[in-house]
Structures are given as C-alpha cells and as structure tokens.
Amino acid sequence: MNITTRLKMMSFMQYFIWGSWLVTLGSYMINTLHFTGSDVGMVYSSKGLAAIIMPSLVGIIADKWLRADRAYIICHLVCAVALCYAAQVNEPGLMFWVMLVNAMAFMPTIALSNTISYSCLAQAGMDTVTHFPPVRVYGTVGFIAAMWAISLMGAELSNVQLYMAAGASLALALYSLTLPAIPVARSKASQTLVSKLGLNAFV
Image (tube, rainbow, N blue to C red; front, side, top):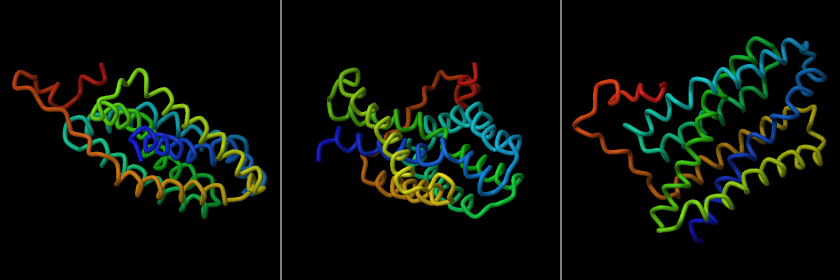
C-alpha cells in the first residue's frame, strides 16, 4: 500500500472521530440526559478553550522533544479513554471536564495529522502541494461518513456515538503505529532560551 493511501486512511479516521459526536452530542445531552441549554453550551465551550492552548503546547513538544507520530498516538489514546468515559457520564459539570480532557487531546491531533502527512510525503519524495490536498479531502469524507453512520444507526440520542468515536480513536492510535517515524527538529546552537523552550510559538 503506497503512502498516499495510508495517509488518506489516517485522515479519514481523524475526522470520522469528530463527526461521530460533534453535531449530535447536543441532542443527546438535551433529550436523553436532560441537560439545559447552558449546560450544553458549557460542554461545547471546552473545544474553544482547548483550541486556544493545546495545539501550540503539543506542537512545541512534538517539534522539540517528542516525535510527532508518537505524540499523535498518545493524544488519540487519551481521546479514546475520555470519550469512553464520557459515554457513561450523566452530570453536566463532569461532562464538561471529561470533554475538556478529550478536547485537549484531540485539538492538537489536527495539526499533528498535517505534520505527519507533510513529513511522510516529503520522505517519499512527493510534492506536498500536489499530493496533500487529496489526502485532506478524505478527512471531510470521514466526517460526513460518521454523521451518516450515526444517522443510519439512529444513534443521535444515544451514547453509542461516543463509544463509536472512542473505538475509532483507539483504532487510529493503533493504525498510527504503522506509519513512518517523524524526526524531531534539530536544535540550533545559536538559539535563545526562549526559542529552545518553544515559547516563540506564542508570538
């Protein structure tokens, strides 16, 4: 199997996870768990909070110390555990914290999946400008496929959507073990302390 096909599968699963619950979780919380509108808004706000902080922090780690593919695997393992636990939660406050943990692990994987794709394509001697867009399109296909699957199963008001997302996240973590290693960036001797710590990513 060539690298573009393998990356398309990764991209498909990456967004399949998100599509499994992002659109329908609110309906599940309101109709099944009887959360209020403000409760649902609080849970969904966890995505915004995590999106502000985590991609930069995990990006620093992946760039300086930990291979991007390993950081990707760890994040998806955390997502799998958090989503599986969220499927058993029926209290608004706890749901917020569990979904915040999930968001803190998932949000960085969007950028990490791009990093892995670019690196793998470069290692294969392929032009990223030409070959990356078809890879990314499969992410959109995965998102739509997940929503269709949830709808066809009639699981919009069920915690099945969270279990499905957890299973997909675990499957993606295991699948990522088969992808090529992504080397960390080599540090330069002339770098300042701020640069070495990666704090310039916040500028």
